[in-house]
Image (tube, rainbow, N blue to C red; front, side, top):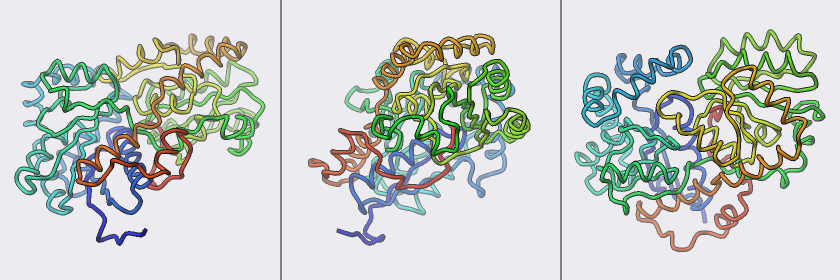
Amino acid sequence: MKHDDDARVPLLFLVSDTGGGHRSAALAVGQALELSFPGRFAPVIEDPLRRRDAPARLRWVTALYGPGIRLTPWLWGAIWHTSNTRLTFWLYERALFAPVYKMVDMAVARHRPALIVSFHGMTSRPAVRARKARLPLTPVVTVITDLIRPHAAWRYDGVDQIVVPSAAVQARCQLDGIARERLTNLGLPVRAEFGTRPSELGSRAAMRHSLGLSGDRFLVVVLGGAEGSGDLVRRAAAIIGRLADVEVVALCGRNGIARRRLSSLAGKSEGRLVVKGFVDNMADWLHAADVVVSKAGPGTIAEATCCGAPLILTSFVPGQEHGNVEYVTRAGAGCYQPTVRGLVAKLDELRQDPARLDTMRAASARLGRPAAALDIAALLAGLAGQETAVAPPAAKRQRNRATSAGRVLSGRAGTR
C-alpha cells in the first residue's frame, strides 16, 4: 500500500559531519525504516553544527575537527580528555557550542517531528530543551556512534532512550547512574549492503573484476576515515613499494591532498594502485578486500566486520577510538600495527598464510552486527507510536539473512 508524502510520520535525525560516521548511521537507520515500514516515515537529516545559516563561530570550530585529527591528534586527545567530565563539558559547551541550542530549536520548529534522534553527542541536550519548549510529548533518542569509549557528551540521561553499540558502552552509561531500562544494546547501525556475505556475492575475484581491478592479486583496501587521516599516503606508498604482486585501493575521503599525492604515484605503479575519494559502494570494496587497513574508526570497524573483512588497524583518534583497537584484536578479527614497517611485514605474512586470513575473516564476521539498523528502526517506530509487534516479512528476511536490499537513502557514504 502506498503512502502519500503528507501521511508519512516526520522524524528528525540530528548529525554533524565531523567525520562521516554520524551521518552514515543516520542514513542506515533511515534505510532500515523504509525497508521495515515502507512509506510510513519521513526522516529528515539535519546538521545543526555546520548548516550554512549556523553562526560562523560554530562552523569554524567544527570545521577544525578534520584537520585536527589529521595534523595534531595529540591536541584533539587533550581536548577530549579535559572535557570528559560533566563540569568541564558544561564549560566547553557554554564557551563553544551554545549556538547549537538555537539551531536545534529552529530545526524542531521547522519539521515538528514525531520523534527526535540524536546521532551526535552535542545535539542530545539541545534536542531535549527544544522538545520541552515546542513538542512536550515528542520522544528524544540518542544513538551512540562511539564503539567502546563514549564521551560525557553522549552520556546524557535527559533523553527517553539511549541506543548503545556495545556492552562496554552500556556499562559506562550505567556507571553514570543511567537506568538500565533506558539503555538498549543494539549495535552500531550500518546500511543493508554491508550485511551481505561474500559467499552470497560470488568470489572476491569476480567482484574485483566488476570494480575494474585485476582480480588475481592480493588486494589491500586502505582507508583513512572520512577525513583521510591515519598517515594514509605513507602507508599506501610503502605497501606498493615493498610488496610485489599486491594491489592497493586507497579511499581518501575528504583528504584532497592525500588523493592528489597518491594519484601521482598511481601512474607509476603499473596499475597496482587505485585512488578514490568518497565512494558510494563502500560495501563492494570491503567485500572484495583480502585485508582492510584503517585507523580504528567505529564506523569502519562496524562496516568491515559486517562484511567479514580482516582488519589491520594502524592508528586511532586519541580518546574515543582508543578502546576500539583492543575490541578488534581481542576478538581475533584483526591486529594492530602502528608502524609502516610492521604493517608491511604483517601484510607479507598474511598473504602467505590463507588459513590465518580465513580465521580472521570468520572472527570478523562474528563481531559484526548487520541487523543493528533494523533493530533500531523497530525501536524508533515503536516510540513514534507505530505498531511493530509483527515485522513485515521483508524485514524478517533482511535480519535473518542480512542480504542487500539496495540503497534506499542515497548519500555520500565514503570512508568513516
